[in-house]
Image (cartoon, rainbow, N blue to C red; front, side):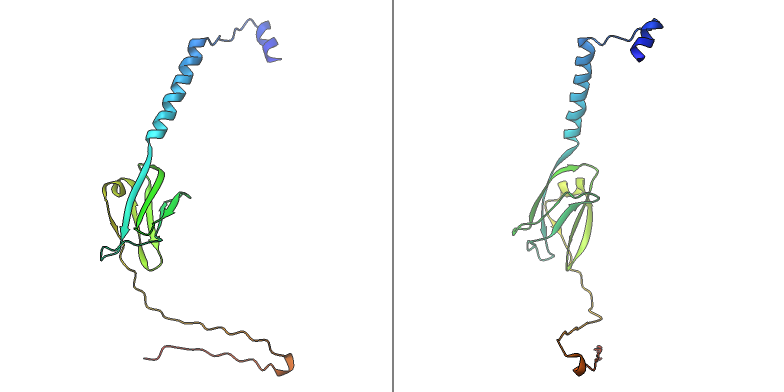
Length: 146
């Protein structure tokens, strides 16, 4: 219907030749190539303060699901990391660190400090099957004595 209206009004659509299609494909190829260069592989090693490798440390790209854990030698590898990304390194018992992807690439070793926290409360819960007529119900609270 639009084509008929254009024909009646003597308006001609531009004819895209082979050269225009080839130019568009070349532009698309160049754009995809730059996208591939903007992302890279990051490798590193995570150790504790004593220089011992730490296994099972979570290494994630902040804001994404891209992540991995360190192996038994404390080594990790992340694929497809943008140059401006932030790398989050964390584990239970260690302080979480956030580093730029460029600084992780330049550093061969990432040192994690142990996180020291005092335990303030302990909750103990016990369950037992008791007949209703024998149930009296009780609760107890434990506290730290200094």
